[in-house]
Image 1 (tube, rainbow, N blue to C red):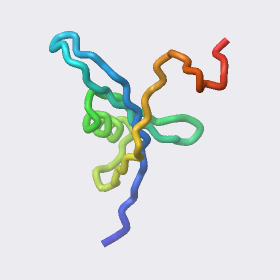
Image 2 (cartoon, rainbow, N blue to C red; image 1 turned 30 degrees about the horizontal axis):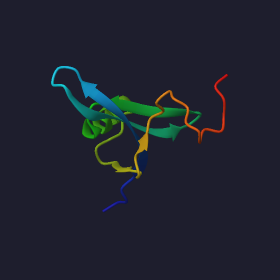
Image 3 (cartoon, one colour; image 1 turned 45 degrees about the vertical axis):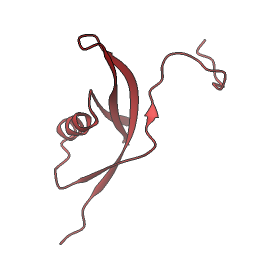
Image 4 (cartoon, rainbow, N blue to C red; image 1 turned 90 degrees about the vertical axis):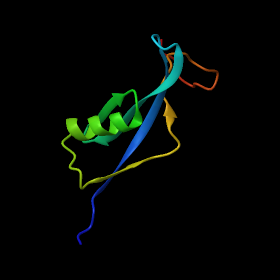
Length: 88
């Protein structure tokens, strides 16, 4: 048996609300540094985000994908007192 290639993905979460069912849930974005940019895929479920990532970036099924924890919340657009930078 050969060695299995492993890639690690960061996971970002964003709170979402389903207007039809009226229930909150979480959407997911998986990403990794790739060359000079970032490779990413987003979906309503983590499984779908990983599947989309594989499809977009042609990651073969034999390549193991590991998820880094803890998951990070996506930027909400609101600055908190802990933010040390200005958007102006």
